[in-house]
Amino acid sequence: MEDVVGALGGFRGVRAELLVALKKAQPLTAQELGGQFGLTANALRRHLKALEEDGLVRYQRDVRGVGAPVYAFSLTPAGEALFPRSYVHVLATALDALRAQTGDQAVEAVLEAEWRRLAEEAGPVLEALPLDERVPLVAELLTAKGYMAEAVRVEPAAMLDEGNALAAGELEATPTLTLRIHNCAVREIAERFPEACTVEAKFVERLLGVPLVRSAHRLGGCGHCEYGVSGHLATVKQEQA
Image (cartoon, rainbow, N blue to C red):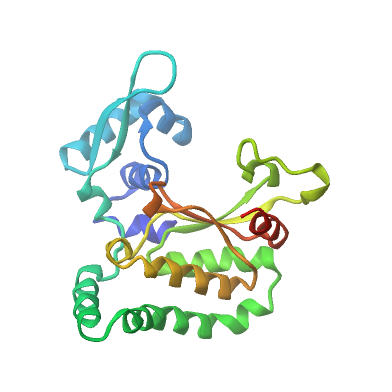
């Protein structure tokens, strides 16, 4: 994530890392952030206060189960805007005009063009690698395009929905690889043109060479997008759908 941190409007050190931590999992309390950074909540509050004064961070009461409400921090729209967006406003305007003139298929073709170029350039390298090496490399490629992606290993049982358990023999013993995307570089586009998400999934699947299962989606209200990329688990989940 070093490239992302370095691009955050000149912020460095703890404050840049705080912005990234909130981007990845917000809202978070000062205590939760302190646990991540190995610092006390009080040590972080002055940094959070400075970010609040800059209009990048805000806090609000958050009710979490039984007990008194806590104060949790999250990014403001200005804080979100620090993360890459890939000329989305200009592109959205152009796509609006294109749709009005030629229809939905032309819009999808434009959205596919950049992904196709990436797939053609990276494909020969990725095809020669095993899956557990392809996923981190695809995460790096997406991060370079502003998507702030990471490869995460998750135990198979942790990916099952509550009340939807599989027989123990149906799960692989090895951890499942998951591709997690914390920053949508074209979020404004995706909100106005949902087909952008379909195109993204199709080409990420092409890059990885295995079926994908989207287990989290920003447009669905999640804080990030997430794809399960274990071929075995993907097949099981598709059969359940």
